Image: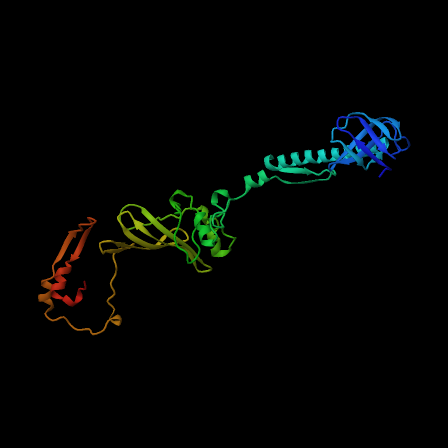
Amino acid sequence: MSAGVIQLTHNSATVLGYQASFSTVLQPGDFVVSVVGGIAYTLPVKSIESNDSLTLVSAFTGSTTNNLAWDAVSRVTLNMVTAAMVVQNTEALRGLNYDKQNWQQVYSAAGDITVKLPDGTTFAGPSWKYLSDNMATKSGGAVPVDQGGTGSTTTEGALNNLGALPVAGASGLKSRYLFDASRGSAGIIFVDTGLSGYGSLFNDWDKKTLAFNSNFSGSGQFAAHTIHRYVYPGVAAGAFYTGLTSDISYQIGHLSSSGNLTASFSFNYGGSAFANNGTWTSASDVRIKRDINRIENPYEKMRKIRGATWYRKDSGDFGIGMIAQDIQEVFPEAVKT
């Protein structure tokens, strides 16, 4: 604090002092600093008239006040303060500009951004826009299928939503699978790993057709069939098959590894059955029977059983034999319904 006190007058450039020694502590271009009404005024000096009188560069704009404490601040000191303030303001403005640029990148950049700090350091990372654009929106804790998730928080639900077969114990298929072997493009392929002997018969079996080159009962071709290939090393190889013919007969049989039909049986929905080499052969061996008794009056009973020829109503096939109702009349215990 400088010596003495001063008086500042509103709208006047003259400053009066009491024991202030203006001539000793001030020069033109220096500054008088004083607080008036809680406001610090920094007033540049134009000229010094005496130890107790000086003239300001411009008139004082505050209220008239006397007995004010004051400080003499040299021009050099104030210039240094001003220069420091300019540097600080420049740094602050640079920081504000960086903040503006950083926030603009955070919200608008589509990919990674580089954040700059006032001290010149930088760091990179994804923008909020990038995170928002690529964030999977969860629903009930699950990421939807259309955002690359499974749409479920359970294994069963995930498989169902993705169209897969359900896990063991689950229910509810969401998709159907058609493996059309007749078109040569079944959906599941089991590749042979290089067997020897009988196993070699199945090399590339997934690329070969299986020929049914012997007779089948019924008309038409298979409408649906299942083939089970097998190999019994050193003994046999071939395929079992089951399926339906076009006249709705159930077919079951076996093919050798060479494609030859070794067994074929057809069961018609009307109750008849056929084998590939003829009709079923009944066994009459005494060893498989018990309670054997002679038929009384066989001649009379056989006269009641008609031998006949016929054509089947369902398939139109020709047949020779006896009528079941005749047999039921003579031997009712032989017919079961």
